[in-house]
Image 1: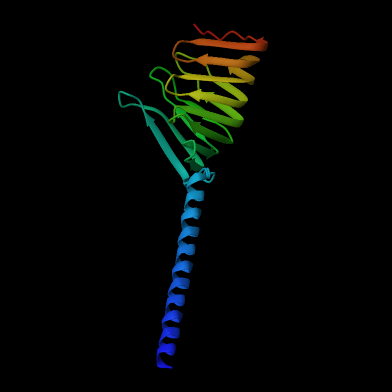
Image 2: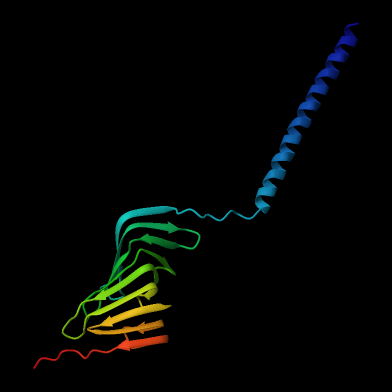
Length: 199
């Protein structure tokens, strides 16, 4: 009788051990399959900003150490998936050796391509006061791409440009302040007022 009970006890222990091993093996198999599935799926693209700054002042320096431009705004967010910056109420001061600073404003802006491209959107307004060598300059449009390192600005949208008392309108503008190149592609209209010359 004792040997029968011992045999039953041994069988029970072996059965429990096999059941536990099977359960552990099944758990391990599920974990391995889940990991392989996760590894084979494409990583989810991050769409949220990784940081933001309020009331900032950013200064970009030139190769020789002088300030090329400074940019302020009420809020700036950085998006890591394309390394871009979204800015609310941007104001940009562009500096030149022989002319007063040009001030560019809009409701929002995006900075891309390693901070070399500034896209300004909605109620874009550029202003440069008159100086001894240049007349007062104003530009209004709905979108403008600024390339501060190349001293270039362009837009496919309609623009209104005021230089002194003269007004020029059109669409598809390209302006290179460094070389003096300027063109409008279409719908060009102008009202020229010669500057007042006092002797």
